[in-house]
Structures are given as C-alpha cells and as structure tokens.
Image (cartoon, rainbow, N blue to C red):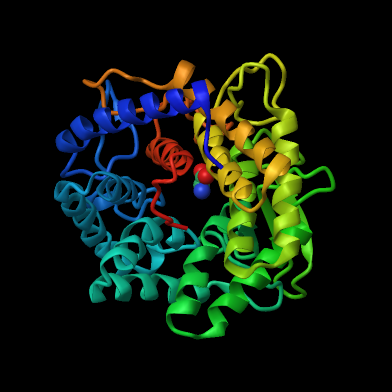
Length: 379
Ligand code: GLY
C-alpha cells in the first residue's frame, strides 16, 4: 500500500534528508559501534563493551543503506561491525537472549545478501546459543545471565523483548531444515501469548517462571513504571514481534495477538503523536521514548502489509502519524551532529532520560524504507 499526495511528498523528503545526514554520520563514525552521542558525537562500544545488546544496530543501518544506495562503503562498515562481534560470539557469559538483536542485522543480513559462509556460520552459532537458553519445562527462553544471589535470581525470567529475537531461530530452522529451532521459537511465542499479553492488549515486561514446575509466578514492571504498567518499548516489541512470528509461521493466533497489541497501542497514542516511556506513568511525568514510536511504526507497517483495504490503511496511517510526529518534533536534522532521534529513554527508573539511542535511529530508518518499499527484511 503506497502513500499518496502530501504524505508521499513528506516521505520522499524525509527519507532523502535522513539518508543525506547518515551519509555524513557514517563516514565520521565508520570505525565505531555507537550506542549514544555525547555532545552530538557518537560514542563507541567496540572493544571492552562489545557484548552490549545494541551492538548489531549500527551494522544493520549500514546494510539498509547499502541496499538503498548500492554504495560499497556501507557494506565495508557493516562487515567491520560483524567481525568485531566475533569477540562476543566467543564469550558465553556475554551472549544472552539478545543474540537476535546482534546477529540478525549483521551476520544474517550479510548472509541473506551475499551468501557468505562465515556470515552464515556466525548466524548459526548465535542461533544455537539462543536455542540453548530454552527452558523446556516452562517453554520459554531465559532472558539474562547471572548466578542467583539473595537480591536477584533471574534464572526463571523471560522478557517481552525476546519476541524480536525469535526470528533468528526461524531463520536457523529454515537454513538447516531443522524444525527444532522453529519449535523452540513457537513454544516461546505461545508462552508469551499466554503470560505476557493482557486482556486489554497491553504487555508485561518481565515474567518469572517457577524453576521446579515451569508455572508463571509473577510479572515485574522491568524498564517501565512498575508492576502492571505499560512500558511503551515493550508494547512495541510485542507488536512487531508477534507480527514477525506470524510472518514466519503463518499462525493465525500470532496475527490476532499482534492486532490486539496494535489496537491497544494506537488507542493510547497521545494527541502530540509522541510516545511516553510508559503509557501508565504518572500524569506529571513527561518523559518520552522516541525508540518506542519508531519500533511500533515498523511493526504497524509490517502488520499493514498482512491486510488489504481499510484494515491495512488503519495500521499504515497510525505508523505515518508516529513517524511524522518524530520527524517534525524529535529528529535532530543538524548534519554536524551524529544522532537522528532525540528523547529516547532506556528505562523509566534510570537516572538519565531522553537522550539519543542507536536503535531508535535504526528503526526510524527501517520504518521510512519500509514505507518506501525499499527496506531490507532483517527480522
Ligand atoms: N531490549 C532491551 C530494551 O529494549 O531496552
């Protein structure tokens, strides 16, 4: 479904501005793997901090730009990011359920485009490690690492974000013609449908399962405001993640779940079109999270692609509304500064709020390219 009239003009202009800015930024930051900016300059998470979960998004941006522009420069920078991640692939304690975020936009994107054997190997090693986190009693993928302490025992924790990592398993299942990977992904998605998605279409962030029985014990507010609240990036991961599970499996229940989450999200978009950190944060708190908007826009566009007519239009228009609000009010268009999105927030209870975060920029670019039907399918 294509945008028409003024919306088509807005898209063309916004995409051109975005690609033009990223052309300069990527040349300045080509030797880094950025997470945020300090005084408008990208920081670098290669080296000691290579295990950080966001370290695939820079490479993903480079692959998207390579496909869009055919400029060999972007492929080289993407490859460097992929190779730097090998240090992570050799460190069991640093790998966790976020393997999908790290290796889908890097090694798997590379393999899909080039059929490179080393890239395939990286993707499969990451997928095997992800599958190894499966708890067969509770039928979920364990989120984070760490031995139990009196303060924290996360052995039985799964988080909604993991819906975005499942496509690594769908890919490996297909690549190896081995249904075990797909079965693990589907079992996790089924558990998430049952234990994370509430009756109104909102989602829990963290769910704890009993290690002896596999039963759900309780939920935690996680990066959102509190237990029972509605952390917006978690809603976005659920929206996009269930849409992706539907795309990979054609399981109707995943599509219906994605629609419920999408309907809840759309109903909660504020007048401004800008997304708060938590849909249930206190009224006097105004912190925003632009990443939640960009991720939800990607999910809504993919969801729209699953329908025709009125239904497709509703999801598409919601995505356009989010992206127009971002481009008008929350994008830093200054080409001498390295970030695109402003007002991104990692977690409600962190000390810092509203800064730039690399995955916000990645999903903003992905969403614009999707609207133009020029995206590389990464997930
Ligand atoms: N996946 C972690 C986050 O969304 O902050």
